[in-house]
Image 1 (cartoon, rainbow, N blue to C red):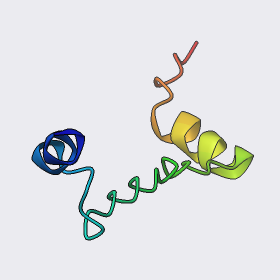
Image 2: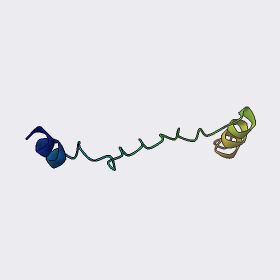
Image 3: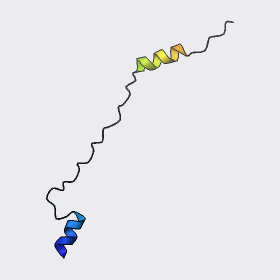
Image 4: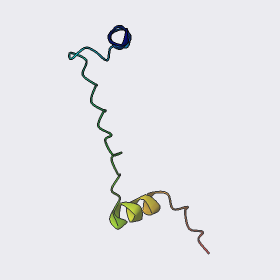
Length: 51
């Protein structure tokens, strides 16, 4: 009886192999340099008023 329950649950089979857990890949980090930031500020700088 115990063996029948194990077979019904799949515990009696040697062919049952647990699936490997998926590898969690880290999110790619954006690399921004100070030069990129300076270029962005220069492009979006409002026009200076002439006195």
